[in-house]
Length: 210
Image (cartoon, rainbow, N blue to C red; front, top):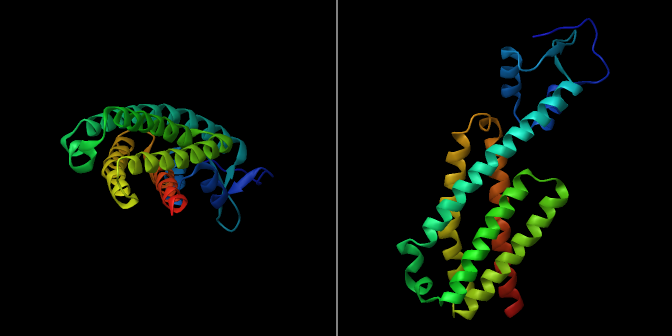
């Protein structure tokens, strides 16, 4: 741990550093102990971190995380395609969907995964766009379901059949990637929020139809 005789004006508290990097205080302490970060201690014993060093680390981690997320989304796409061709996707009313509607479902699923990647690593403007499109995809799911004579509850149930395994794959894939573990909680919360927006879109079609 590095120390200085006085704290420069750009040194930040551990709370601010945690928010900037998206990690908890225990992780920051580990990084300080290992030399990944340097800290100054105030006379009262509180850690202070260089804003410039934190910004550089944040940019490096963001670039590394973007590469990790790209690989993880590729795994999600493979898992989705396997699910789409599995027996469960051809049971009950799902098995009665015509080829044109099924093709549209698959196209929307692929788009949803691409939007998830955009949402996880994009700036706020792209994240907002991804959320809006996720809702629109949910609404289209609802319209397709109604066209097949399926109510919203059944459509939601079918969506959840795909949602849970995909989130499980995301969690396992991230946990196995070097450098992603510290961000796992945030990424999973973001992914669940994004996938929930599809349900919001599906529910909106029921209100519009009533």
